[in-house]
Length: 226
Image (cartoon, rainbow, N blue to C red):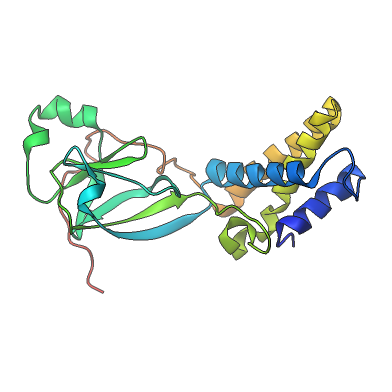
């Protein structure tokens, strides 16, 4: 269902009763479809991937940070492994409160923080070292035969949300406010249903950066043997 951007556009045009481009062009409808898919992936955190990354010298900023790739939204499940040592989430403010000289420490990191699109550590890092983590990612932009949501079969039933998002903006362009609101409400209800059915972010773990507490001991652990 809705396996391509052309199929989603056909669904949009069926609902606005304009099967051939006239008031709404294909370019603008497809732009709204892409915008909708981006919004869905960002709001629901529905796409997760496992990353294994070898640090390059040119990637290191301020001796302890690396910039995440363009698909990155946030770290998932609160764990990062540096050279197979488990690092726990923290923040720059938390580290500075307890150790004003943390920036000068060397050795394998045991904590990480996120600063914008940068992933940082509580120790200085080196080229050639390996970082592993699960991340929430953006969906690849669809065009031609590229399937929505990176082809994830779990999300087939939610492709229709991009249709409803686009239909809402079609009516908005025509100043049909009631119709635009109707389809935006359907879209928002679909987002909530998507989160509930997939069990996404029920405890908000992928959004929080917990401070030091009894439930987040600063310890080191080895990655399980393969």
